[in-house]
Image 1 (tube, rainbow, N blue to C red):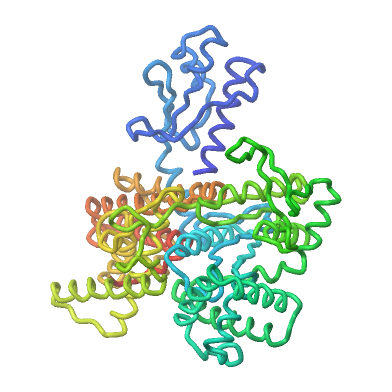
Image 2: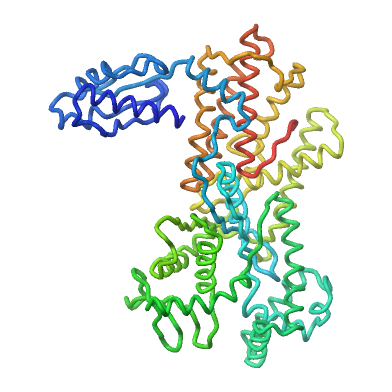
Length: 584
């Protein structure tokens, strides 16, 4: 209730001046939402903090303050509790007015930001010639959710997929394929991506063990960089094949991205080196050009260098990331850069950001953030792997989620002696399965590791996608059962009388705050927790407050509350990248 708390703070600031003089102008009223409903909706702790300054008991300050405080238009009479806490409870009429405005607004009364920004969200980032695996899951869905939230606020968001499509690995792979599968370098889809991955592993092994192969691979990289026609054609074929495989997964996850791989920044790397030299930041160390970093040391305690150009003239990830920062700020005019990768890359980004700032490439008005996340772990608490010890393919994981979701749905249909069409079962299985995987990930604090469990994520109870989807579907069942058209409830108004209605109403009004908070700190689990609590409060309201059997005007009022809850769930889940279903 951002508008409410802002209004309350303003009234408190006026009251502090009215009660104690201009010396208290601008003093923070320390107003926060109450942690316990029995203390009302908001609580001010200002009297305690002012006791020493004013030379009065906190309770006396509180009583004097509320005499000067005018909040009668939207709060009940303030009360003083304990040693001097001021408690405030919103009036039902105020809540009703806010909800009725929300009900008639497609955006649920969440206005777009007044000053939209150009924001780059860098996420997913698989490697060409490798399959997407479970390690790409978190970056992909966390990035998509953050992008959705920022887009909903009205920001101009560029969703970038910084794929690994350049460098030594292509020299290795092309050199190896020339020997064992030359058709793959001239003909599209001559081998499938799974075979390509196997060839890549064998090429890497040869590269590590065979000096001649290593040198041939390096020469192939030189040919690629110089634009040799046959090497460039082979590279393009390998990239296209990987892109098609990636796109199938992105389509399954309903995720849109603009690919801008490492190759895009390759022509910009030489200028990065030149500009760092001009800025006096480059130091030659053992033939390599480096920037020595502040606050980073090696084991001996000496300053740690960030290598910008290797002794052989080649570049590395840091150089590419520096080129990307420059391009995104100077050409794309980005005002905020967000990078979503695993926590293991935190130092890398801290170092790259430091160099870019010292070079003057990041203006004060531009915010650059690394959004780290933890590991996906198996039931044994270790990194999630297959039984053979390989990294789990993302496509296999998503397919299994759909299969398990279907098995759950078919079991419930048999238990309920209910028949559904194959189309319904397939569609619902896909949505519930994919949603379960997404929500299980997003509902965790992203900085933590989490245990991947199909049983937990597909459960109908608890903080899971199926629980949210079921709450939404329950509202739609009311529509079907009562033959209600939620779009045509007339000019009725929401009326709040029961405690469960008030509790639900107050929670519905918090959505704007949650969206704003996630857009700032980039923790989507806050939105998940909000939606979980909304579902709980709605289910409590549904149990205690008859809807279809209530008398008018309460019946229509409660139908409107149901509809508003469903619309809030639908919007919140959409911002997480989750589609709803009308029936479960």
